[in-house]
Length: 282
Ligand SMILES: [Zn+2]
Image (cartoon, rainbow, N blue to C red; front, side, top):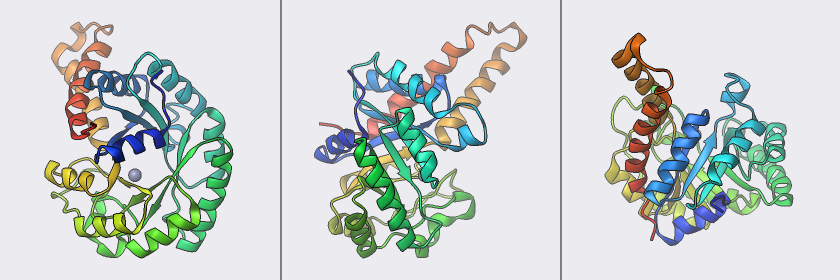
């Protein structure tokens, strides 16, 4: 059985001094591509759902997505896990746990730290009962469109990270060290010294968000120095939509609609297998 908990994959990554990659997925095509690519690359991977796709875009719902993940992932031998990305709504997180998510992210970055701690504690308490992993975020990984990655005031502080992890009992912590969500307007510069400081201050697994466009040498540095989970969304989605457009441009009205899924799948798998080379599991 290929389905594992995120914490199992984090432990494996930590032992290999590397990072497991979490890919944001939106539908069957993206989930299937991640699971299939992981099997081909023989590299564990995480399928993540961003709540907005359900709440705002209505392209999925929690139980449909969890069921779809299970149905696909159980076909493979490679370890695969399911994770709910960024939610600041405790009731929604509960719904996700009920729907079968074995890992959730509570995002309290927009509220004061003490409140973030209190809410996180509540989530961890509930999650524990169901054996569910909890990721939280400290500091603020903002948006590349705002150049948030350059704003050191938003970065995570090592002392606060240690206090936060101890108080809440979370499984993993997303930290702000110079990355941001979306496409960067110029290459970001990760604060590796700060990462080392945070990694020395806490035993909690560390997570890097905003993975679309960080130079590979910086990622290797980050993985060696304590990042055990790395999130990729934007560039994967962009490739998905570009590939559909490419198919339509190339084949136009003469294209067989039955050929489109295979065409897209092959392109996505090729990208993913290459991306997964960043994860260097022993
Ligand atoms: Zn994120």
